[in-house]
Image (cartoon, rainbow, N blue to C red):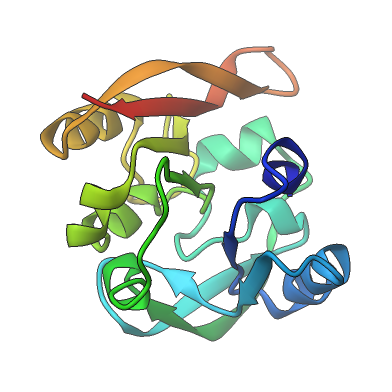
Length: 184
């Protein structure tokens, strides 16, 4: 919720499919009238989807963990699979005009490309995108940084810079980063 501190007047829409994390998110945002929290996964189409709950909640995802994730973060392991509701960004925001400049932040554990594909017309209202991208597969079926960069280019955005990154706990190798993209 750093956005509420940096931009106190900004409207924040937060999405969390994991029921356990949702409880904490609602506690963290209680009293913030400019933040709305939605129990929802974001993807390429609406419906229900299997969600892999991990012992390390930050690793929970629609996608199963890849072996490289287990090596880099050995404390993350799947403990359950649940069904969650999924919607597209385009559908969710079809009746919600976004004030400019608009920032879209996606940190959805390897499912960023699918959420972007589900954004459709909404992306025309977005000026900046911050998303998590991996350099090697951390989740089965995820798009890696170069693929994400090409996808973003096709959607009218250019890569600006890394904002933060996560390293392999053993080798120190950067395995993921938060990447900033700007409308070209």
